[in-house]
Amino acid sequence: MPGIDIAVLQKTIEEEIIKINSSQELEAFRLKYLGRKGVIAGLTAAIPTLAKEERATFGQQANAMKNRLLELIAEKEKSFSGQPAATQNQAIDIGMPGIAQQIGRVHPITQVVEEICTIFTRMGFSIVEGPEIETEYNNFTGLNIALEHPSRDAFDTFYLKPQEKGLLLRSHTSPVQIRVMKSCEPPLAVVVPGRVYRPDATDASHLFMFHQIEGFMVDAGIRFSDLKGILETFAKAVFGDDIKMRFRPHFFPFTEPSAEMDISCIICKGKGCSVCGRKGWLEILGSGMIHPNVFEHVGYDSKKYTGFAFGMGIERIAMLKYGITDIRMFCENDLRFLNQF
Image (cartoon, rainbow, N blue to C red; front, top):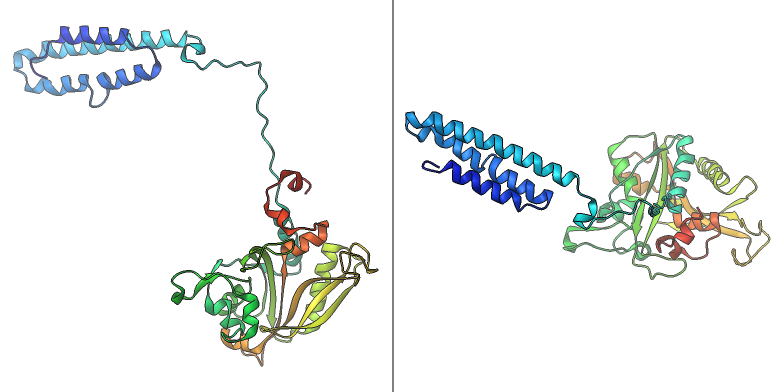
């Protein structure tokens, strides 16, 4: 900067600011001259390099130019504030109606999950969630589903590469049962909501991704009658006090004895209709007493502790509760459907 002509620089500044036509250009101009690395800062930093007899005069001239620059910028800003918005092609017609924002709703699946969890928390259950990417041990082996067992076909799922690491997308929420029992001692009363994955062909009653709620209770002296009482309270809270229940023997590798639970058809009241296949009953969940082999895998004494477990598909419960005939409607994002809930 030494040797610069302040008068020439002043003239250049005044010529440049005349040509500025927008606030953006004015801001760039301000930074060029008044910024931390701008021209004025350069002049100030150069003063110590001048001869002693020149410093005072040069400093006064630089300061005067800075003050003049600030005045020019202020005047330019005032000229912009007085211009109509149309000069920048941003005319706004304040008489036009605004764009209404749609108010969102809680998805019906989320509503049913929250309702079911609330029912069980009132009965003393805790809510626990687990990872959707699981180990093969937690998803199968720890639940008494051996590699060669034919029941494993019904729970097979999507494996992650490299498959040798044994990681997969969980096919049910039951692996959280293994995680909880490994980390906690009885007594336990837990419900586990979450997404699960199976390579099912998509149709009116199947999706490759759906939601489940797993529930289990473990303590000394837990009996099948406790399971029936808990599930009866749940079913009547969701579907009404006038429903009837029945248990049918079934097979699950992680429970023994095992049972499917049915309720009387909520459409025909048990008389028989197309919804229940003229049987008068609707299947809603599977359940049973936790298998002793599962207790061995988690380190529980099966002679001291007993427990029950149950699992249900949330989409299944929602379809029965609201009379929905096609499971695919839950994931089509059709507001005409979702706004009903």
